[in-house]
Amino acid sequence: MNYKEIALALQAPFPNGTVQLSSSNKRQAHIPVQVYINRLEKEAGEHWSWSVIGEPTIVEADSAVIVRGELSILGAKRSGMGFSHYDRGKDIKNVSAFRNAVNAAESDAIRSACDKFLIGWSDLAPYRDCETDESIEINNRSEDIRETDVERVCQRCAKKLTDIDQLFLEVNRIKSPYCTEHVPKHLIKKI
Image 1 (tube, rainbow, N blue to C red):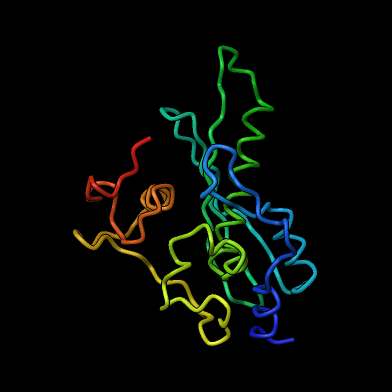
Image 2 (image 1 turned 180 degrees about the vertical axis):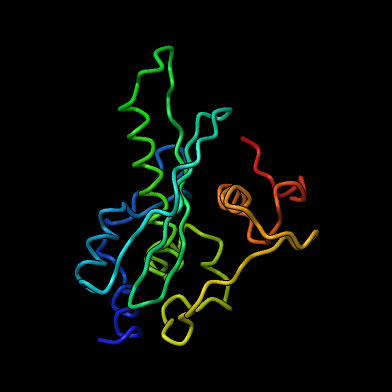
């Protein structure tokens, strides 16, 4: 099998019922990480690998953890970043809750990396802005497979975006590359 054959198999639509909707917002949808891993195992077999990059980043002010990793399929690599909140509570010894948050952030990072390989795009398109964007060919992607990731820089100050910058953009669904310092206020979602 070559890369394009594996990529096309990975990008095939998932069975009906795979996409899970958020209980609070029906426009927010995701595919469980187990489904992605099952697809990777089935279609890429021993030709894929996942590795966590560095230690989890802990943002104590927000009780959050960030995990970054890299998905490799036949030498093509995509990075992913995941985010999860943890409940510290009054008892600082709540290790299992923190461990669960790290695992959830890693699962989110795997989903993020799979998204960069275009896996699940056809299933998630109805819940994303790209559904009506004619420049994105969701059903016919064989020619659009990227071989390398491109370093993103802030379009205002030209500084390389950090993991925190990229996570902030992803959480706020901001497509344009800005560092957190230069994101226009009208693009930031109100919670």
